[in-house]
Image (cartoon, rainbow, N blue to C red; front, side, top):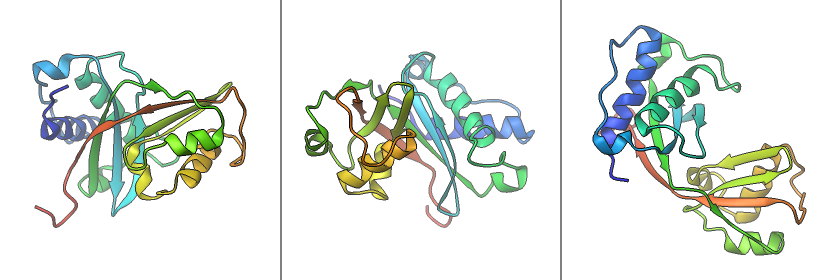
Length: 185
């Protein structure tokens, strides 16, 4: 999908600004941004996570998905209090547009670890009602496949050393767009 990353970032910022009463309208997306696509919006403040919400599967136009996920990341991420107007200017936006999920059939955990592509794969883990994902960006903090997978299991509410033949893995890639950090041009 050919999208304008700067426009997606402006859309995410405007959607949050609108909710805070600091913006009056949303930028219009390009024709390609009217196609259904899945996205995640990540907020960072002073280099630390401040909110992250997204969609794993495409079910609405990308412009709507980014705007809704930006608002959700700012005000509905249960790990953080709602974003305030005072924090808004110092909050950095990141938008990730996801590829479709690809099943990753594996024989066992060793097979899964051997097939993961650090720095490339986003991974969805499912087991029964438990589900979690890590965007490819998480490899920056967890560069070892065993650590990445163990923490993903914990995020899904499972023990780090858990494995079951019914555990399902899916992979995806992202196109990532980031606002510059303070002081960057």
